[in-house]
Image (cartoon, rainbow, N blue to C red):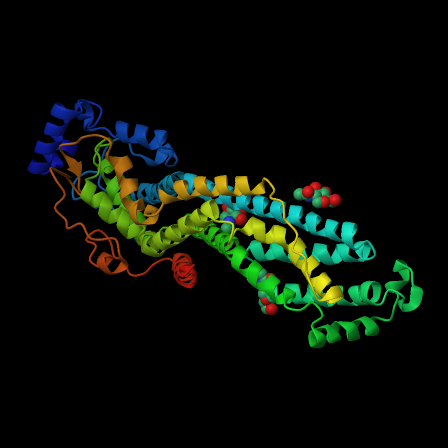
Amino acid sequence: MFRAALRNADLFWVILFCVVFLPEAACGSADADSCHEVKTAYMMRQIGPVELVPDTPGTDESLRICVHPGPSCCTSKMEDSYMMAVRSETQQKMRSYSFELKYLIAGHTKAYQETFESLVSFTSNLTSTLFDSAYSALASDCRPLVFQLFSDIKRHLSGDANSSLDKTVRRFYNDLFPLVYRRLLNPGFGHMSPQSYSSLPSSHDDCLRMTRQDVSPFGPHPHLLVSSLSRALGVGRALSRLLRLAGEVVNATEKATLSRECGRGLVRMQYCSHCRGMTLIRPCTGLCVNVMRGCLVGVSELGEPWGSLVVLLQRLAATLATSSNHNSMELALLAVRNQVNDAILHAQLHGSFPLKGSKGDKSRSLKKLSREFQGSVQRYQWFFSELPEMLCESEMEVEQHTCWSGQDVVESYAGRVVGSSLKAQRENPEMTVRNTDPVLKGAKQKLEELTQVNITL
Ligand SMILES: *[C@@H]1O[C@H](CO)[C@@H](O)[C@H](O)[C@H]1NC(C)=O
Ligand SMILES: *[C@@H]1O[C@H](CO)[C@@H](O)[C@H](O)[C@H]1NC(C)=O
Ligand SMILES: *[C@@H]1O[C@H](CO)[C@@H](O)[C@H](O)[C@H]1NC(C)=O
């Protein structure tokens, strides 16, 4: 008999539990010889084909996870289906917890990208108007140069690892010099129409480009442009790179697979009670914490460097939200027009006249976006450190007086609850934890590298 086979202690708790706390539903005490409830739960949770569940408890010696000397409603085939189900349930739950974070990161990555792009596009147009208004002889030929300069700036802001402002600015002035030389410094040169310039032997332009390096006709202005842009774009660029990294880390945690060992722990915690006819009893908190920490050790290991990443993101957002006129990205971009003008004037007159830049309303949206992001990302500083416990809290909604220890109904969990680090997890009484998922290990390495590099920002 199913009930008779329970050890006395079990029986006591089962009866106490059933009578005092959860009449009928939890234990089906009225019908302990049947696997009816187990079948119902199996069906409701869509664990597998319901024919796998026997009508009455039996003894299956091939049970590997929910091993129990007495009768059981489980078979080894059911264990397999519980394993599949519990792994996907747990991954589903993890995704539901990280959903908001993922959305926050993806949404802000996009919003920042769009703000940067519109700012760059605006200042690109503004710079083009310089040629239209002040150097009409150069206007049509300079448009592609300005466009190229600003697409490189956009690439730099988006965090492209290979982008170099130095190269970008050097190329711009190298390309600009032949035009300035022929149209402004020696306007009589050849009396050519703009169209025929482009058909001039390119070797001549190459020669002028090389000359540019030697005679530095633009004075200190190219160099000044590089340094003001580096300074002003550094924060936006770092933010783009770190946001992308944050997205990759969240993706990696979603893709990480739960080990077989973890699956066994999860089945013991969630479903071995079902084998004994108890479908509603909750796992003990200590058991759950051990199992979840063991399963998510790779995720917990991300916790510390992720915390540093969040602090960096907040700091960068704070800088963009409050940046003064001296280091504002918008002003630096708006100033490109004047700096290019200064450079051309230097070439013409060896003098310069600073012009006043106007401030677009792009700056307001960048500030607002950054203030909002700074506040919302803060909540996620300890997200990955706390995820295992969060997953357990959802298990523990009900105040309970007895719980499932993985083997039995008990008053409280007797095992030692171990810490979440990989080192502490080697002592996990619920499962063998040896290593972390390679994807998560890679994510951790990348996090540590990038947060180290950017910590000085
Ligand atoms: C810049 O100019 C292009 C083409 O003239 C135009 O399509 C675009 O909307 C302008 N961008 C801004 C921000 O003014
Ligand atoms: C950067 O440059 C390296 C080598 O020049 C190349 O392999 C890599 O794909 C480039 N990365 C990007 C993002 O363009
Ligand atoms: C994360 O994964 C989604 C698909 O699930 C993809 O669209 C996105 O580009 C990825 N994000 C990063 C930063 O790799």
